[in-house]
Image (tube, rainbow, N blue to C red):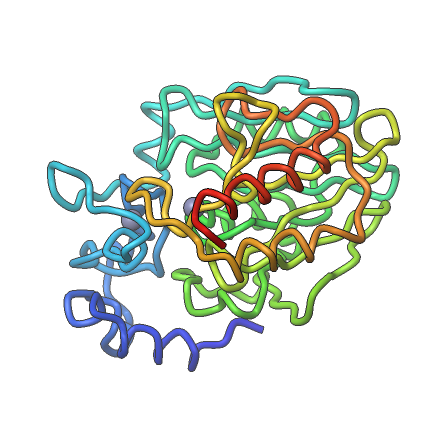
Length: 301
Ligand SMILES: [Zn+2]
Ligand SMILES: [Zn+2]
Protein backbone atom coordinates (compact mmCIF):
# COMPACT_ATOMS: atom_id res chain seq x y z
CA UNK A 1 0.00 0.00 0.00
CA UNK A 2 1.21 3.54 -0.60
CA UNK A 3 2.76 4.72 2.60
CA UNK A 4 1.33 8.16 3.09
CA UNK A 5 3.13 8.61 6.37
CA UNK A 6 6.48 7.96 4.74
CA UNK A 7 5.66 10.39 2.00
CA UNK A 8 4.61 13.08 4.44
CA UNK A 9 7.74 12.51 6.50
CA UNK A 10 9.74 12.98 3.35
CA UNK A 11 7.91 16.13 2.47
CA UNK A 12 8.41 17.56 5.92
CA UNK A 13 12.08 16.70 6.09
CA UNK A 14 13.00 17.55 2.53
CA UNK A 15 14.59 20.90 1.87
CA UNK A 16 12.04 21.15 -0.91
CA UNK A 17 9.04 20.60 1.31
CA UNK A 18 8.65 24.14 2.47
CA UNK A 19 8.22 25.26 -1.10
CA UNK A 20 5.91 22.46 -2.09
CA UNK A 21 2.23 23.22 -2.15
CA UNK A 22 1.41 19.57 -1.50
CA UNK A 23 2.78 19.49 2.04
CA UNK A 24 -0.36 20.92 3.59
CA UNK A 25 -3.74 19.23 3.99
CA UNK A 26 -5.17 18.06 0.70
CA UNK A 27 -7.55 20.55 -0.82
CA UNK A 28 -11.07 19.22 -0.95
CA UNK A 29 -14.07 19.93 -3.07
CA UNK A 30 -12.27 22.50 -5.17
CA UNK A 31 -13.04 22.71 -8.85
CA UNK A 32 -10.51 22.09 -11.62
CA UNK A 33 -8.16 19.83 -9.71
CA UNK A 34 -5.24 18.90 -11.94
CA UNK A 35 -2.49 16.31 -11.79
CA UNK A 36 0.39 18.63 -12.67
CA UNK A 37 3.51 17.20 -14.33
CA UNK A 38 7.02 18.65 -13.89
CA UNK A 39 8.39 19.51 -17.35
CA UNK A 40 12.03 18.72 -16.49
CA UNK A 41 11.62 15.29 -14.88
CA UNK A 42 8.10 14.33 -16.00
CA UNK A 43 6.90 13.52 -12.47
CA UNK A 44 3.13 13.67 -12.13
CA UNK A 45 1.70 14.93 -8.82
CA UNK A 46 -1.35 14.46 -6.68
CA UNK A 47 -4.20 16.60 -8.02
CA UNK A 48 -4.15 20.21 -6.85
CA UNK A 49 -6.01 23.36 -7.84
CA UNK A 50 -2.75 25.12 -8.79
CA UNK A 51 0.73 23.89 -9.64
CA UNK A 52 3.00 22.83 -6.76
CA UNK A 53 5.64 25.43 -5.96
CA UNK A 54 8.53 23.05 -6.41
CA UNK A 55 9.43 19.55 -7.59
CA UNK A 56 11.38 17.64 -4.89
CA UNK A 57 12.79 15.32 -7.56
CA UNK A 58 14.36 18.24 -9.46
CA UNK A 59 15.42 20.03 -6.26
CA UNK A 60 17.28 16.87 -5.19
CA UNK A 61 21.08 16.86 -5.73
CA UNK A 62 20.71 14.12 -8.33
CA UNK A 63 18.59 16.26 -10.68
CA UNK A 64 18.28 19.95 -11.49
CA UNK A 65 15.63 22.60 -11.94
CA UNK A 66 15.24 23.46 -15.63
CA UNK A 67 17.40 26.41 -16.66
CA UNK A 68 14.32 28.52 -17.31
CA UNK A 69 12.97 27.82 -13.81
CA UNK A 70 10.35 25.34 -12.62
CA UNK A 71 7.73 24.68 -15.29
CA UNK A 72 4.60 22.52 -15.22
CA UNK A 73 2.50 20.77 -17.80
CA UNK A 74 -0.30 18.21 -17.85
CA UNK A 75 -1.12 14.96 -19.58
CA UNK A 76 -3.73 16.83 -21.64
CA UNK A 77 -0.99 19.19 -22.92
CA UNK A 78 1.25 16.26 -23.86
CA UNK A 79 -1.62 14.89 -25.95
CA UNK A 80 -1.49 18.07 -28.05
CA UNK A 81 2.30 18.19 -28.46
CA UNK A 82 3.68 14.64 -28.24
CA UNK A 83 3.32 11.18 -29.70
CA UNK A 84 5.00 7.94 -28.66
CA UNK A 85 7.12 6.03 -31.18
CA UNK A 86 7.25 2.24 -30.87
CA UNK A 87 10.20 0.12 -32.00
CA UNK A 88 10.83 -3.62 -31.75
CA UNK A 89 14.23 -3.94 -30.08
CA UNK A 90 14.26 -7.75 -30.30
CA UNK A 91 11.54 -10.43 -30.33
CA UNK A 92 9.37 -9.85 -27.26
CA UNK A 93 10.72 -6.39 -26.47
CA UNK A 94 9.32 -3.07 -27.72
CA UNK A 95 10.57 0.38 -26.77
CA UNK A 96 8.32 3.43 -26.42
CA UNK A 97 9.99 6.79 -27.04
CA UNK A 98 8.15 10.14 -26.83
CA UNK A 99 8.49 12.50 -29.81
CA UNK A 100 9.71 15.11 -29.16
CA UNK A 101 11.65 14.34 -25.97
CA UNK A 102 9.53 14.35 -22.79
CA UNK A 103 10.83 14.56 -19.21
CA UNK A 104 14.43 13.38 -18.91
CA UNK A 105 14.37 11.79 -22.37
CA UNK A 106 14.14 8.14 -21.42
CA UNK A 107 12.24 5.41 -23.21
CA UNK A 108 9.94 2.81 -21.71
CA UNK A 109 9.73 -0.86 -22.74
CA UNK A 110 7.00 -3.44 -23.12
CA UNK A 111 8.44 -6.83 -22.14
CA UNK A 112 6.23 -9.62 -23.46
CA UNK A 113 5.92 -13.02 -21.78
CA UNK A 114 3.40 -15.85 -22.26
CA UNK A 115 2.10 -15.02 -18.77
CA UNK A 116 1.55 -11.32 -19.49
CA UNK A 117 3.41 -8.13 -20.34
CA UNK A 118 5.24 -5.64 -18.17
CA UNK A 119 5.71 -1.96 -18.83
CA UNK A 120 9.31 -1.39 -17.75
CA UNK A 121 10.09 2.21 -16.83
CA UNK A 122 7.70 4.90 -17.93
CA UNK A 123 7.41 8.02 -20.08
CA UNK A 124 5.17 11.01 -19.36
CA UNK A 125 2.95 11.16 -22.50
CA UNK A 126 0.10 8.68 -22.81
CA UNK A 127 -2.58 8.94 -25.47
CA UNK A 128 -5.23 6.74 -27.13
CA UNK A 129 -2.87 5.68 -29.93
CA UNK A 130 -0.34 4.48 -27.34
CA UNK A 131 -2.97 2.52 -25.44
CA UNK A 132 -4.14 0.91 -28.69
CA UNK A 133 -0.56 0.02 -29.71
CA UNK A 134 0.19 -1.57 -26.33
CA UNK A 135 -3.11 -3.49 -26.43
CA UNK A 136 -2.07 -4.84 -29.81
CA UNK A 137 1.04 -6.22 -28.10
CA UNK A 138 -1.19 -7.96 -25.55
CA UNK A 139 -1.78 -5.15 -23.04
CA UNK A 140 -0.14 -4.92 -19.64
CA UNK A 141 -0.29 -7.17 -16.58
CA UNK A 142 2.03 -4.97 -14.51
CA UNK A 143 4.13 -1.82 -14.48
CA UNK A 144 7.58 -1.59 -12.85
CA UNK A 145 9.82 1.47 -12.79
CA UNK A 146 13.53 1.46 -12.00
CA UNK A 147 13.63 4.65 -9.91
CA UNK A 148 11.88 7.99 -9.27
CA UNK A 149 13.37 9.78 -12.31
CA UNK A 150 11.09 7.64 -14.47
CA UNK A 151 7.98 7.38 -12.27
CA UNK A 152 6.38 10.11 -14.42
CA UNK A 153 2.75 9.17 -15.16
CA UNK A 154 2.99 5.51 -14.07
CA UNK A 155 -0.38 5.68 -12.27
CA UNK A 156 -2.05 6.87 -15.50
CA UNK A 157 -0.52 3.95 -17.41
CA UNK A 158 -1.77 1.49 -14.81
CA UNK A 159 -5.27 2.96 -14.88
CA UNK A 160 -5.35 2.82 -18.70
CA UNK A 161 -4.74 -0.94 -18.57
CA UNK A 162 -7.27 -1.97 -15.91
CA UNK A 163 -5.42 -0.74 -12.82
CA UNK A 164 -2.61 -3.27 -13.02
CA UNK A 165 -0.09 -3.19 -10.13
CA UNK A 166 2.83 -0.76 -10.27
CA UNK A 167 5.80 -2.43 -8.53
CA UNK A 168 8.12 -0.05 -6.67
CA UNK A 169 10.74 -0.90 -4.07
CA UNK A 170 9.74 0.15 -0.57
CA UNK A 171 12.98 2.08 -0.02
CA UNK A 172 11.83 4.62 -2.61
CA UNK A 173 8.25 4.93 -1.31
CA UNK A 174 8.80 8.54 -0.26
CA UNK A 175 9.38 9.53 -3.90
CA UNK A 176 5.92 8.49 -5.08
CA UNK A 177 4.34 11.89 -5.63
CA UNK A 178 0.98 10.58 -6.77
CA UNK A 179 -0.01 7.92 -4.23
CA UNK A 180 -2.63 5.49 -5.55
CA UNK A 181 -3.86 2.03 -4.56
CA UNK A 182 -2.25 0.56 -7.70
CA UNK A 183 1.24 1.37 -6.40
CA UNK A 184 2.53 -1.79 -4.72
CA UNK A 185 5.67 -1.66 -2.60
CA UNK A 186 7.92 -4.67 -2.23
CA UNK A 187 10.71 -5.29 0.23
CA UNK A 188 13.91 -7.34 0.17
CA UNK A 189 16.45 -8.10 -2.55
CA UNK A 190 14.37 -9.67 -5.34
CA UNK A 191 10.76 -9.99 -6.36
CA UNK A 192 9.70 -12.63 -8.88
CA UNK A 193 6.87 -11.42 -11.11
CA UNK A 194 5.50 -13.78 -13.79
CA UNK A 195 6.79 -15.25 -17.03
CA UNK A 196 10.23 -15.74 -15.46
CA UNK A 197 10.67 -12.01 -14.81
CA UNK A 198 12.37 -10.85 -11.61
CA UNK A 199 12.80 -7.40 -10.11
CA UNK A 200 16.21 -7.07 -8.48
CA UNK A 201 17.01 -4.34 -5.97
CA UNK A 202 20.52 -3.01 -6.54
CA UNK A 203 20.45 0.25 -4.57
CA UNK A 204 23.07 2.78 -5.65
CA UNK A 205 21.66 5.62 -7.75
CA UNK A 206 18.58 5.43 -5.47
CA UNK A 207 18.23 3.35 -2.29
CA UNK A 208 15.40 1.33 -3.82
CA UNK A 209 16.80 1.23 -7.34
CA UNK A 210 15.53 -1.88 -9.17
CA UNK A 211 16.33 -3.59 -12.48
CA UNK A 212 14.26 -6.14 -14.40
CA UNK A 213 15.73 -9.53 -15.34
CA UNK A 214 14.15 -11.18 -18.37
CA UNK A 215 15.68 -14.64 -18.79
CA UNK A 216 13.94 -15.38 -22.11
CA UNK A 217 15.48 -12.30 -23.76
CA UNK A 218 18.49 -12.34 -26.10
CA UNK A 219 17.41 -15.67 -27.54
CA UNK A 220 17.28 -17.28 -24.09
CA UNK A 221 20.66 -15.96 -22.93
CA UNK A 222 18.96 -13.38 -20.74
CA UNK A 223 18.41 -9.63 -20.77
CA UNK A 224 18.82 -7.04 -18.05
CA UNK A 225 16.64 -3.94 -18.30
CA UNK A 226 18.73 -1.52 -16.28
CA UNK A 227 17.24 1.97 -16.59
CA UNK A 228 20.05 4.26 -15.36
CA UNK A 229 22.19 1.66 -13.61
CA UNK A 230 24.44 0.11 -14.74
CA UNK A 231 24.49 2.99 -17.23
CA UNK A 232 25.40 2.12 -20.82
CA UNK A 233 28.42 4.18 -21.93
CA UNK A 234 28.98 5.70 -25.38
CA UNK A 235 31.47 2.85 -25.89
CA UNK A 236 28.73 0.28 -25.59
CA UNK A 237 31.05 -2.48 -24.43
CA UNK A 238 31.13 -0.69 -21.10
CA UNK A 239 28.77 0.56 -18.39
CA UNK A 240 29.14 3.00 -15.52
CA UNK A 241 27.71 3.81 -12.11
CA UNK A 242 26.80 7.29 -10.84
CA UNK A 243 24.85 8.72 -7.94
CA UNK A 244 23.93 11.65 -10.22
CA UNK A 245 24.35 11.55 -13.99
CA UNK A 246 23.46 15.18 -14.86
CA UNK A 247 25.57 16.55 -11.98
CA UNK A 248 28.37 13.98 -12.33
CA UNK A 249 28.43 12.82 -8.71
CA UNK A 250 30.01 9.37 -8.51
CA UNK A 251 28.99 6.39 -6.42
CA UNK A 252 31.50 5.14 -3.89
CA UNK A 253 33.19 1.72 -3.95
CA UNK A 254 30.77 0.06 -1.54
CA UNK A 255 27.75 1.01 -3.65
CA UNK A 256 29.38 -0.18 -6.88
CA UNK A 257 30.28 -3.52 -5.28
CA UNK A 258 26.70 -3.79 -4.00
CA UNK A 259 25.27 -3.34 -7.51
CA UNK A 260 27.59 -5.99 -8.94
CA UNK A 261 26.82 -8.40 -6.08
CA UNK A 262 23.06 -7.92 -6.53
CA UNK A 263 23.33 -8.89 -10.21
CA UNK A 264 25.65 -11.87 -9.67
CA UNK A 265 22.91 -14.56 -9.40
CA UNK A 266 21.31 -13.57 -12.74
CA UNK A 267 22.40 -14.70 -16.19
CA UNK A 268 22.20 -12.08 -18.93
CA UNK A 269 24.01 -11.52 -22.21
CA UNK A 270 22.39 -8.21 -23.18
CA UNK A 271 21.65 -5.04 -21.23
CA UNK A 272 19.32 -2.20 -22.23
CA UNK A 273 19.65 1.31 -20.78
CA UNK A 274 16.98 3.96 -20.54
CA UNK A 275 18.07 6.16 -23.42
CA UNK A 276 17.73 5.50 -27.16
CA UNK A 277 20.62 3.43 -28.52
CA UNK A 278 21.77 2.31 -25.08
CA UNK A 279 22.41 -1.41 -25.38
CA UNK A 280 25.27 -3.70 -24.50
CA UNK A 281 24.39 -6.19 -27.22
CA UNK A 282 26.49 -9.17 -26.09
CA UNK A 283 28.54 -10.31 -23.12
CA UNK A 284 26.79 -7.76 -20.91
CA UNK A 285 27.33 -9.48 -17.60
CA UNK A 286 31.09 -9.61 -18.14
CA UNK A 287 30.91 -5.96 -19.26
CA UNK A 288 29.34 -5.05 -15.91
CA UNK A 289 32.11 -6.86 -14.05
CA UNK A 290 35.03 -5.37 -15.98
CA UNK A 291 33.42 -1.90 -15.93
CA UNK A 292 33.10 -2.05 -12.14
CA UNK A 293 36.74 -3.17 -11.85
CA UNK A 294 37.88 -0.29 -14.07
CA UNK A 295 35.84 2.26 -12.17
CA UNK A 296 37.07 1.03 -8.79
CA UNK A 297 40.65 1.19 -10.05
CA UNK A 298 40.20 4.81 -11.17
CA UNK A 299 38.75 5.95 -7.84
CA UNK A 300 41.30 4.03 -5.83
CA UNK A 301 38.62 1.77 -4.44
ZN1 LIG B 1 10.84 17.57 -11.57
ZN1 LIG C 1 18.14 8.60 -12.67
